[in-house]
Image (cartoon, rainbow, N blue to C red):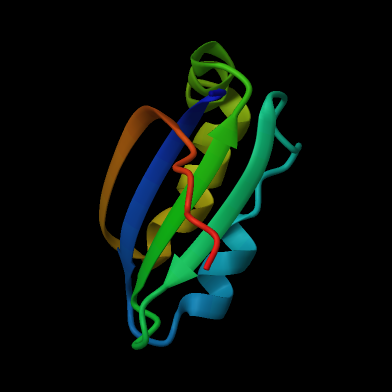
Length: 98
C-alpha cells in the first residue's frame, strides 16, 4: 500500500469571516510537492480544517518553513482565533464494496 504524507490544520475563525479567510488561505505560489488539498468547515463556518497530501515529508516541511507560507499565515492572521496542526503518515483504508 502506498504511504501518504498529510498535513492537517484546524483553525477557529472570527464569525462571518469565512469568505475573507478563504481568500487569504489560498497559497501563492502553489507549493511544490503538494498533491491534493481539501478544506472542510463546520456548519457555523467558524472552524475550518485543511487537509493536504504531499509527495514527501521534506516537501511539506520545505513549504511550512518557506517565505511564501509565512506571508500566507500573516494574511490569515486577522481572521484566526485559534489554530492547531499536525503532520501524519498513513495509508488508504480498503472499504468493502456493498
